[in-house]
Figure 1 (cartoon, rainbow, N blue to C red):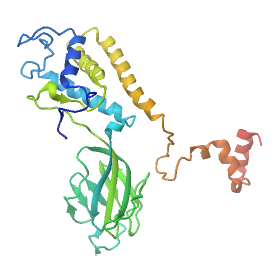
Figure 2 (cartoon, rainbow, N blue to C red):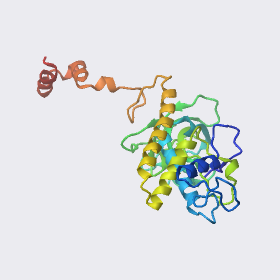
Figure 3 (cartoon, rainbow, N blue to C red):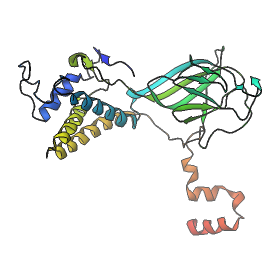
Figure 4 (cartoon, rainbow, N blue to C red):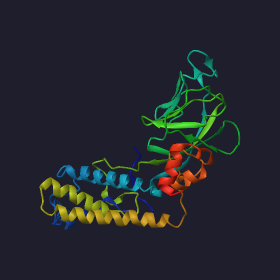
Length: 306
């Protein structure tokens, strides 16, 4: 896991102390504490020796926020142009190095690249990668453009390898390929994890959560967890406002994205959006070669009246 964001230059990133001060205010724990400082609280405090649950609640809130923002592909959680150079050629356990073998698949994981026989630990997926969104490839040792690879829907085909990887499948948290007879460079785009905060000695004032304008959401998430622990009757109100704050944060990201025209590509299709081609009426009208097929003629009459 990545290190916490310390002394962030972006002022819109909230510090842990900003989040916790608001959380204490929400649960009415802003009294002077061990050091006599107003606002430091007496129960929901930063001191791990006094309140070991604080850091657990805070990390839970951060993880939940990351999940919610990944679901709308927040750009702050997208990692792109990650290049892996020189994925080795296919290695068949029966036919040897560079020999085609339809029984072999290769894998790329956080521990290395498996070529069919040997693991290459110097070629690894990024440790903060949760799942890929797109892959490209080119021949190693060239300055060629990276060409898009195709994500398969129902498993990789069992066929002889060629000079390109071509297809990929995300399975068991590992990238799976058929392998290639030439060395390949891979370009990755993926949704990843941002830092979490586990040190009990870190300075809350200089440790920042790298999601812009997230202080309110995180504070309410912490307050809800704290209220549930105590069985507080005010949890429902805190939860309702937490959902509102989360909606507002996600809505801001979504509205920004609306400045660009997006087109959804069906899973497993790399040629663009074909949704409009497969409405029932247009499909029946556009497929003349099925016009003489009696069941489809009945469907045309039923749905289109023709």
